[in-house]
Length: 340
Image (cartoon, rainbow, N blue to C red; front, side, top):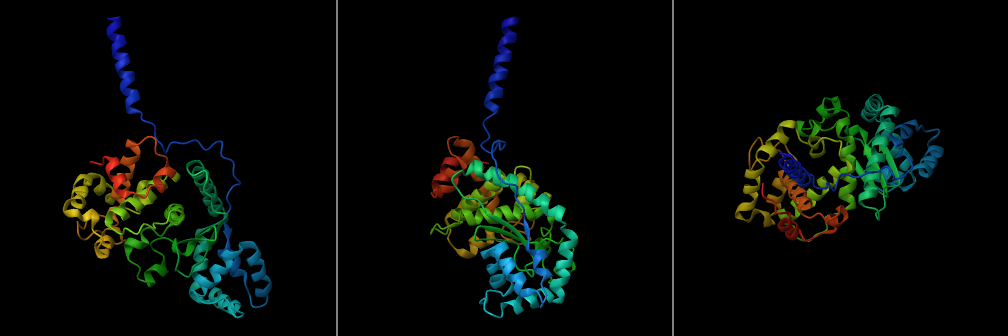
């Protein structure tokens, strides 16, 4: 009886160890030491401008925000125009515009200094995780919130992550209604999506898709890597938030994964380089028309992440840095052994 008991214990232990494969995304950041991240509030600073103090304030902003301030004035406020001797008037017109002032008021009501401080705390953990996964890569030097005039969600320029808070005022905001923005867009224009959008924007810029092969598989694998990296940096954030899906859309994907993969695997769709077809499966929208009204948009990106997850599970020696540097998408597909 004792020997049988030992056999059961040994068998159970062996199965337990087999079932507990190392999770490459499960890391410890306790030894990573960085300065706490603080978001600078250009959205508040710039609305302190008046015709009397603009010269002094603008010099102060240049010192505080460095080249990002110049980019803000030229590319966002001046819509890509040249920053010349009259740019102060352009900026004053922007901050004194009735609608812009109202949107700024909404931003201040929704995002207190405590809210932004908490966002900095969350981003601090993201950067710590990034340093563990990508120890040789540089991290952003500056983090800024701003009002964009409803133009930009997230920008990453000159080593600065900038977040346009007027693009995250809640789905029912009056300005979004006035602009007649579709519901599939406004549904994610809220506090819940700020951090994940900022991180995804940063990672897309960090690992630019420069591969000249422009077929569907290339896009699937590239964005699969992006969303997998977002999982690595944001382990506590729900998948639906990171993907920008509803709970029902996530359920559809999980329930129909095998059929979705079958749809793409047949008729050489993966190797199609027709931009219209690629766009159909990677662009935002209410749903993926070619599949079903229940199928969420950007479905090729979601499937791409499933391929990447399978690839990492079947290749224990591959680091996240190795993954992002691997450009052979066919190799990734084959070695993923993906079979839902």
